Image (tube, rainbow, N blue to C red; front, side, top):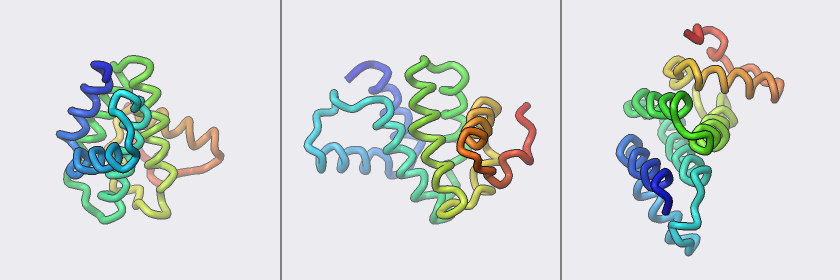
Length: 137
């Protein structure tokens, strides 16, 4: 597994309760070698766990998790930024508001994450509640 993938897997496992167990069960269930997984699959699986927490109203770790996503959006490699944006933030947006209350995570977005989410909304023609109510600074 590349250093970047190993780093992201370790960081997300620390920040997101239940992610390490989910990841291990996912890898085992699919019979895949860890080396086959992309950054996108890591961030996508993290979004699945985050969506489960958010839909249950469990937001204790979400601020710290979104701070980490923001750090990736600001200073990660292009591949890391793409994975955080398209495989994490888009997945969370797509579950909002049907399964996730936007006020449980939108106010916690950093400026780069918020900018991406606004651009995604513009692209899809959606308007996520609370996304435009907060400053991007």
